[in-house]
Image (cartoon, rainbow, N blue to C red; front, side, top):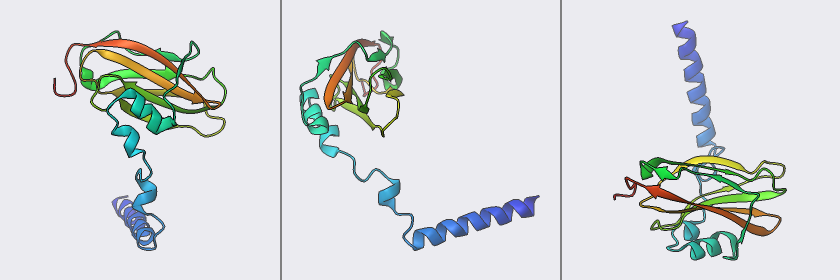
Length: 156
């Protein structure tokens, strides 16, 4: 069995090396080469929205279910869930921490027919509002919730 495993591993490594050398696997495809650096480096929520979506005009929506703890014991790993599965045509979901140095925490783009649902952990430096922005049908919708942070995750 050890010889068979060794041969399988060697074959897989060799095939990957050939693919890299042939240009079939390039770092631009594997890594996030087309990320929106301007939106993620923005210092305010409006600047981040303008850079990410082309507009800072966002309407409140009761159709977005934002789930975050009322009190986060550790801001470095704050769990956040955004459920926009009741909205048709969800194109993207962005999560923002309003008072972070760089408010845009993450942005997820969806293909046609995908359900708008995201669950992740974010880093928060202090007590602030967590804002979920959903782009659906060309409109920007949001839900927000205050999260009190007892131990800051951004060095505080």
